[in-house]
Image (cartoon, rainbow, N blue to C red; front, side, top):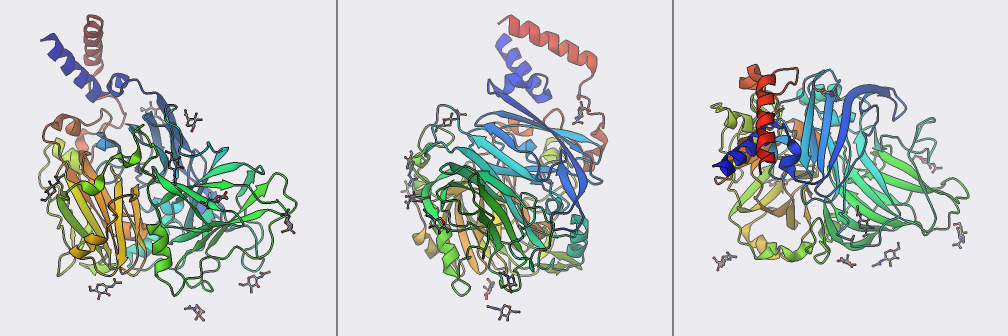
Length: 585
Ligand SMILES: *[C@@H]1O[C@H](CO)[C@@H](O)[C@H](O)[C@H]1NC(C)=O
Ligand SMILES: *[C@@H]1O[C@H](CO)[C@@H](O)[C@H](O)[C@H]1NC(C)=O
Ligand SMILES: *[C@@H]1O[C@H](CO)[C@@H](O)[C@H](O)[C@H]1NC(C)=O
Ligand SMILES: *[C@@H]1O[C@H](CO)[C@@H](O)[C@H](O)[C@H]1NC(C)=O
Ligand SMILES: *[C@@H]1O[C@H](CO)[C@@H](O)[C@H](O)[C@H]1NC(C)=O
Ligand SMILES: *[C@@H]1O[C@H](CO)[C@@H](O)[C@H](O)[C@H]1NC(C)=O
Ligand SMILES: *[C@@H]1O[C@H](CO)[C@@H](O)[C@H](O)[C@H]1NC(C)=O
Ligand SMILES: *[C@@H]1O[C@H](CO)[C@@H](O)[C@H](O)[C@H]1NC(C)=O
Ligand SMILES: *[C@@H]1O[C@H](CO)[C@@H](O)[C@H](O)[C@H]1NC(C)=O
């Protein structure tokens, strides 16, 4: 009886957040305070409104170790709602912290919300970003780095230091102006530039780059090896990344160690993260260019859409000069880039977040339990409004986030009828969600029938990238899958007119966002959610955190003070009970 009571109390304590430490075990806590606000900056020489975090653009780094408990208090000083998504953080058994619109109520202006989650069994390079209102186009993003535990060595010599680069295409129009264009059914047009760590290009050519632009200057020591963690946090332009005269040794992709491979340049698509080891093995006769240039575009028209930073050796004898290193010359060769993507493999013998080798999960031997084909089409007009679709459906966010609606029994909030194949016929607007099978082993085929390169991301999981090719996917393509050393990651490109197939083990209960990372398409509804219920343990799934925000049909339950949901006297009684029980054991 006492044991039962104790369990009940522990559950109660966890659910109300009175003593969170007991619920998460002994792993260390790391605390951050993030204040989101506007600031006027001129990354491309023209003053514009940028979203900063604690005054910084990009935002501060989250730097933690596998299994740490991360607590981030986010204060919204913007003039509109905010939600922060932790891109690539799996929120294992903690789906309430994901920070996307059908999962969490937005944080209104002046309010704050504390995210709390454990980076359970995760390692590697990720980022955070605002997930609504097209805000990422104005900033608000930053790196999220999870380092190795002391008991697990890296699969390469320890780098001398980390260097984070956040790269992305950028507009001088602010996010509200961009939103207005999208709402009017307009294409955003060519970006005004590419930023590297929030800064514009180095003036490598006086006719292309105006005077007075602040550029990123990376200081290095000769002979040392650095781990460059490169994140594409832009809008929709694929970028080719390269460092003049230096080799990029790819070692990690979104939390998984790759079979280490040298590249002279590498294609990085919206929402993707990579780690490269770069050794400072040049003679420092001058500084070197770090370049992120628009990909798959007519270079003579897009020559201003380029990010240029400087790699400065401490013994450098002069400024970088001359032309930038060449991008791949493959305008007429559609397969070069895809072949590079296919060459990214996992290192099966390396240990990742856990001591056992990454390759010990033999995904290739597991039978697929369901197949989903997600077809993306170019934006269209649905009921007079612009929309982008996945299987013919442009997602409409529910008024009440899905898990909240389930928890409080709000009816008619969403439908569990998302089709597992493209629908023929008219596109529609709908709050249509996938009814997933918990612990199923899914095959997802992303079929890009749009005219632009896309990247797709699944919250809550990583997936094995087993194949990609041009044309329309068919079942006989399974014979070509990589069932041995496919990379495990969470954001994958899908070439226009091509498909990418991934395997996904659906073992994380919750409601998880599946989206394109291309901001414009995402904004226009190209996303859905997969709902996974663990019938044996509904408790953990439906117990909302004590500070959960309410909105939609449940808006009346929200108290803006942020006070705990039980009153002071009750809290005192509960604490006394806890003390009695824990000390009596
Ligand atoms: C990570 O591994 C390296 C060796 O590969 C080690 O030097 C380092 O201390 C480890 N990190 C932590 C936080 O223990
Ligand atoms: C600068 O760019 C312009 C336009 O592409 C080109 O014509 C010119 O040759 C470049 N100047 C130098 C010094 O490379
Ligand atoms: C990769 O490049 C580095 C130079 O940065 C070189 O030392 C190494 O041998 C190369 N590895 C392979 C497999 O080519
Ligand atoms: C260093 O670079 C300069 C300029 O590129 C070159 O002339 C010189 O030969 C290089 N020296 C060595 C030792 O590589
Ligand atoms: C790129 O654009 C220029 C100028 O508009 C045009 O002359 C050229 O033919 C285009 N190149 C390709 C490969 O389409
Ligand atoms: C794979 O990882 C092991 C560490 O387990 C490392 O020694 C080896 O160099 C790695 N191989 C490649 C090709 O990355
Ligand atoms: C997969 O399916 C095949 C054929 O239906 C069956 O023989 C095999 O045992 C299954 N494998 C697993 C691991 O369930
Ligand atoms: C889209 O699909 C149609 C029909 O399958 C095909 O004819 C067309 O080439 C595809 N377009 C792209 C860009 O994939
Ligand atoms: C967030 O709100 C809580 C409760 O109102 C308060 O204690 C905390 O200091 C706030 N944090 C920030 C960063 O404003």
